[in-house]
Image 1 (cartoon, rainbow, N blue to C red):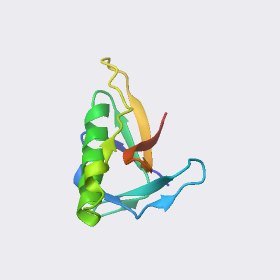
Image 2: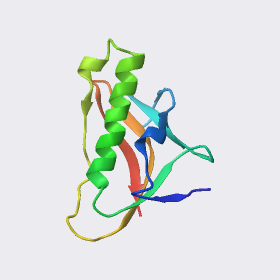
Image 3: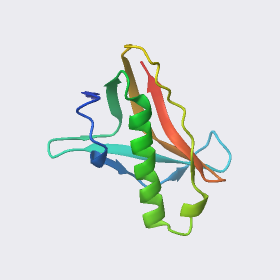
Length: 117
């Protein structure tokens, strides 16, 4: 079951990361699943209705991931580079994005794994 959050209901402090696993579709890359947990529920993916907050949401999640990685593995922190792929349209178009996790390749570049609807 998926629940679609409104962008103003989304709180990045409710985002938690699961340990990385190696992926089969890319060489030397890993995937970290995201959980979104509140007092009432835990979601395995994050579905958000957004209009003009795409870049802010992506930036908040990737910054939290960077803090998570550097806290748990401080020797890797200096190599990590964020890759931004979501772009604000500048219009009042509404999208639903489904964020399932974060990919990271062997050189430390990482970004969101998502689908748009």
